[in-house]
View 1 (cartoon, rainbow, N blue to C red):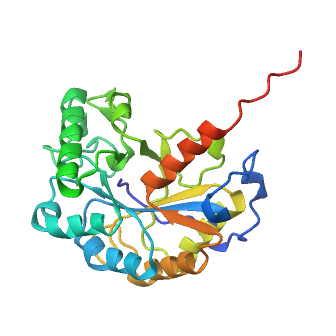
View 2 (cartoon, helix red, strand yellow):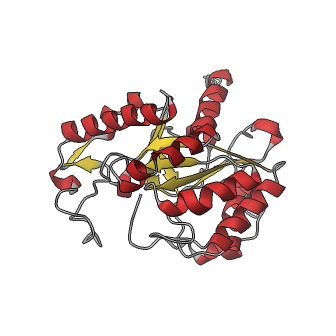
Length: 279
């Protein structure tokens, strides 16, 4: 995803970690290892800094993350072996379309080329490209089950909604902004929100996951550049977050988005049906 300004609001940085009781779900959600929250770390656009800095840092701390590849990018074609290695290390490779088409008519979208304008890309063409993307990902990692992140959070192709056409192709999809889930029982797996930090401190990132622990739910954080590339966070801020998560495994279950959403779906199947209202 991509939009004009991604800095987390200042309130996150100063929020009292456990003072978010109002956001707690109606029923406590049971996470693996009795954790208080799930944390999904993701990285969009298949950037060099992710291979050079983010993945080595994740591996040092024993954390798994999700990487949403723009499959037509040079970083995929030129560093295919590195992406295959990342998948073998347990990281998820997700679909972020072939060409990262976004709506050129939206504000601050001068960077969108005419060729990659989602306003002139038909639903049929985009859906076909996304499915080709799944085939390419299978050739890289051998996996068939997949998740998806919408470029720019745009939901229409040539003015028509397209996500309903691909829901059956994905376990879950990230389609909007706002990464802290308020209630797991009402979360739509095909309309999950994300936080997209840029130029923030490690403490701001830590405060965000602390809010998820206070709520007892999950948070989805999507990075782009780490110590370089666009929409970047510093390597120091990224390292501080990873170190915090790794040292608080009793509180945070940090895993790939696909594993978290598969777990959420399985838990819902185990949940007893709601009681009928008294007449």
